[in-house]
Image 1 (spheres, rainbow, N blue to C red):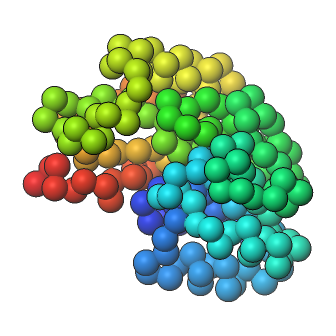
Image 2 (image 1 turned 180 degrees about the vertical axis):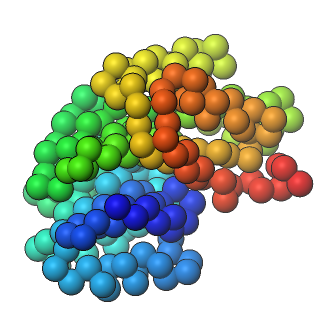
Length: 220
């Protein structure tokens, strides 16, 4: 399995007979399109963790409608907010949902934001965790007020929810081979709080940072 970083929170896991794409939004270097162009006889899966603009590309449903071997697995809120025809997805992801395909087994978990986070187990046993927007969104006092206002709970409630989600995942997966997880500069000095808590809770083989294209001036 090769794991390709595309942009922002998008990764593509490439196997000999399938391509699994997480949270495709933009493809500034054309890497994803090259992978798709070369996926002649491969099954392609687009997993969408939630409806936010930076985790979803509106072209995906049409691509899947036009290609019988391409499959869409969106979260429940993506289907509702992006008005996706419910007959199109291979499965609609909700908390606790489990989906088995010929290429992987998926389980969906809660998020500290909208939508879900997911753990996939490939046929060889390799595990992949994509967090979506699940993180300990612990904004420092100096953060942009518009970012802080998006958090609808207290910091204590946020942390308890995040740690609870990690416990749920650890119960099923005490060890994960590849974790794709937000490292967001908007959190300033707290940007590593969530990643460190993840590493303390679950044995992670490889941590792949994502979501760091927001607010880069925060660390300048």
